[in-house]
Each structure stands twice: as C-alpha cells, then as structure tokens.
Image (cartoon, rainbow, N blue to C red; front, side):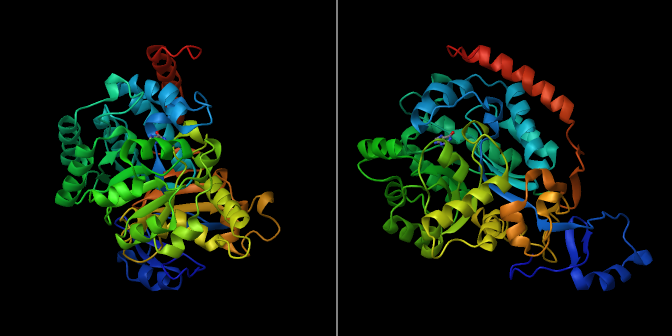
Length: 441
Ligand code: GUN
C-alpha cells in the first residue's frame, strides 16, 4: 500500500533497512544486486503485506496494571488506581512493563509506538525500547500539580523540564534514528500554566513533539473548565502549545471551532476507541476531525483501560463506531487502515519514513496471514475490509522494523516471551504490594 493506496501483487525488496522496490519493480531491482539475488527471503504467500502498524497512543508503563483498574470514570480510575500504581514503579518494574507491552504490540504487527511514559525511570523505558528494536516516540510524563497526584509523581516545573530535556539529549535519534523523544505534559489538570509555557518553548527550540491528553471525558472537561475557565484546546491555543508538533490523545469532546483551530495549527489527534468505550468517555467524532483537516492516528491507550494492545481491534471499533455515528457517510475501511498506517505516521511527524510501502521508506512491515477460516472464502477480495473487519492480531505472521525481523511465527528476535511474562508477573506482584492499594495486594 503506497500513499495513493495502490495495492501491488508481488514481492517487496528490502535493502539496508529500507524498501528498495515494490511489486513489478522488484525483478529489475533484484537483477541489479551483486549476485542478482536477495541474501534472505521471507515467504509471504497467502498473506497481505501491510505497512507496519503505527500505534499513536499507549502507556507502556501501565501494561503491568492490566485488569487492576476496572473503574468506569477517567478521573477516579487515575486517582484511585493508575497514579498510585505508577508511583510504585521501580526501574525494573517499568522495564518489565514496557517489555511485556512491546511483546504484545510486535506480535500484533505494530512497528511504531507513541508512548507517554511515566514521571520516573524514563531512562529504563528508553533502554527497553531501544533493545526491543521497535520504532518509538516516548517521553517523561510531566506533572507538577493536580488533585490526587501522589507526591512521588509530582515534580516542580523546572525539574520536570530539566529531566525531560536530559532524556531527549540521551535518546532522541538513538537506535539508528528509531527512537525519538517527546515532551509529555500529561493533561491540563496535572500541569501548571508555567509548565505548559515551558513545554511550548522547549518544543519550538528543540523540535520535539508535545504528546498529551485532550478533551477525553465529561468529568475531566468539567474540572478543566473549573480550573482554567475554558476548554483544553482553547487553553493550549492561547499558550502556544498547538503547533504541527502537537499530538493530543482522545479528543472526544472537542467542538467544531476547536477542530478548526487544531487544523489551522496543523496539530494532530489520536483516536482511542477501545479506551473511550471502556472508560465510558464517549464517542470521538473522527469523521469531523478529518472533515476539519486535522491529521489523525489511532491507538489503544494503556492496557488497564482497554484491556488489549491490539490495533486490529481498535480499527474494527473505529469502523463500527463511525458507521453508527455517521450511517450515511462513515469512515471507509481504507480510511481506517490509513489511521493505523500512513495517516498515523503523518500524525506523529513520521510520514517521510514509515506508514506506507514505498521505495526509500523504512522497511517497517506487517505480514498478515489471510488464509485462516475466518478470512474464507474471499480472504483477499478487498484488503482494506479484510484488515479492518476480519483480521485479528493473531493473524500476524511477521513484523519487521527497518528490515529487521522482530517477530515471526510466534518467536520474537529481541525478546524472550517466557522470560518477559515471568518477569512481568514477579514485578507486578511486588509493585502491587508497594502501591499498598486496599483490596489489590
Ligand atoms: N489522562 C491523563 N492521564 C491519563 C492516562 O494515563 N490515561 C488516560 N486514558 N487518560 C489520561
């Protein structure tokens, strides 16, 4: 699938981590190679080869909390469970949580993640991401105020910025350019005005993405209104936070005027349908986002508000919700695949290197087996419909990042799943004890 949504039948040639030729161009490109042949072959017969999936919003620090926070309201969920659990992380538990999440994501065809991080131990997260081989944007979550924010998660604004910049200095561009660092002010309720202004300035100075949550839930909107006397997007606009480097997750309660100025600033939004449903946050109007011209992607959010890190599931939900909300003119299956590939990459500022299968782009690939009974009898009739409405994460046969096979047929090349699961179990038990939440230990 290229930028014009051409679906080619045939081979794909990878050289030095990049796509060297696609479909009809492959035989001539192969013949021109020394020896006239490829060093290695991956048989994708019976499969669709998709651009690697771009996962626009996730909290890898929360993978260990899956199933531990089943409240239905965002703010209670954060204050009573998520923040106390995040505050109990150590370097080891954070790394274990990230590895578990990346294991699941790679097995589900994801080649690129945009992760929010947590306040502490961001270096351990960066090291785990770097070692995994996945493409990632991540940052230190910034919080300098807020009801229910535990002391260990609260910095003063200057410390928060200093640490965030130190993470950027160490990891931005690491892993042969696979890693990028963002600034991640968590949301309006946890960040002071001074912090937002510092974030806007540092983003402009250093070219870093600003990854945050925006207009997610009704109760959050009420608290934001009480705290800053306006809505989140208007607040961001007035403080210079909205630029082409802005990536806001959720956006459920944005009005049309807000969408207009988000588009005018070339800001991006990430749709998180599974999380919005599970937390009861509402139905994001992605149809209106696109009509307004906002760049947009898709993600699952963290494991405790979904509880899957499965982009295929999110695509299916996005398509179903769009049909229910806009029966006459819903997002097409192709629109939805674009959210998880080329549009998602553009939303993260990575459209020049990933998100479609084109010569010169990074060889970030997802090989999807469409030969199982649940794809029969017309498995490859319309690839977009197949991907959105029939495919499952478990159909993924291989996931490659920059030409490197990170997952293939139930095996991960950079992660040992038995070890990852054992370590995650032990770290999760210890973390729950440290968090000391009544009823959890
Ligand atoms: N808003 C602020 N923090 C979070 C978080 O961790 N998850 C979600 N879904 N929304 C948030």
